[in-house]
Length: 615
Image (cartoon, rainbow, N blue to C red; front, side, top):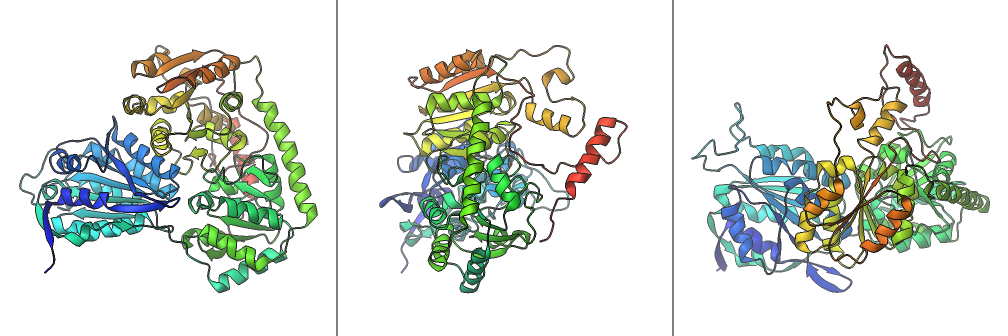
């Protein structure tokens, strides 16, 4: 007879989570790093009580905002290279819908996240319950249906026994290299409290190890032939290189075969910035070295990249006639993009297979020389824009100061605005994972919460968060959480008094300065926001500085702080690095009464002719 144990659905869920393990560096560890929870009527009685019972095995973290706590969970998973992850639970209603943005972020960036929003009553006795969204033509609708398009797997638990197959499916998705992404299990609040006789075997310890799919023989043949025929090959390193723990394999491959490497936002830090074959960032926010090579390349080996428009310059970057793409990716959807030659495999396994078959083949020496010369030119240009001047600082100069003060050993966290473009070009990343950006969904507000998740995953590392005043205003509450948890962050706030990045884009597309900078928005009185005082009110050590020299001193002082430090500096909203970069397809109005817009449209049409929609 099957042995059973009588538990509520929520108790079964919590107990199951405590028995899921993984192995890292030969050591068995829990795969769940904890649960973020903001309790409400839809989860406090059921899941809240269940989490209390396992609090010594599965820590529960309290946050101040549901979107932020899910961002923290994502930061933890990304910093753990997807080997470990967290869950986040909310009540029904706004608590649940607050997490939809984070779900989309995880979905776009292929990151594991278990979302456990409360849901309506399955028995419908109290309908409509507080915060219930009613569909007039569909009695099964709830607010949690918003999660469906941004979840890799979605389920609504309307009976206690349904949690058994749902959790097994959830774990498959959360640990799968191809389908990895957010899982949403909407938990009907009455069902959370209902009991069932669960098989004891359901709670047996299970070890989840990363799957490494090997390449198909015919796809490998085609990829090897294409590489051997190439005269000007390049590698684009995406986030998949880091998640597959393939950084050393990539380094060896590039060195043995003489292929220059360029990095996406997600893939930056795949090679140390000072490696002679690391050309730096590629695409719209690319270095002059990477983009020079990309324009000439006759073959692109895209490793673990989804080839989004910032990487490809809206598919106008690659200009060589007959250029081919090899898509080495665990996900077939990404591997075959833009009529590429798919090589569906784990990044590490795929590179090893290619290396074995290529033998002593190397790219021509002249191509490697071109790459090294281009990199030397780029390093000079980068130094010129990061060195301090006496003017109101640029983002680039702040980046230079942060690096001089804290070095490449720090983990740099950012997400949106103008900073990601400047950091992608200019931040000298050191060890793998030291550059932590959300630029897939480019989520304003991710920065501080994501940084907190990074610090929980990497408690001994120096975690530096950089963000603008716009992002700070959108979501800063987890400064208080970081202080409460004793997880020290160093946060650098660049105050350009508005949305400087999008204002520059507005100007570049012929638009008037309108509604982006505070001075150009509708107002009767300009706000004077004291970000340092605000951060101090949440318990941080706060400093406001007025120059690059003061910033460097403040950052060095902050190293000795025992809790989160916030340093604020005013910056110029109009300056961005002109060196490097590439055109980006942002549609300009075809008809306008403003001459500047018409001129921008003419330039836009000219640039669009370089796009290659099909190879």
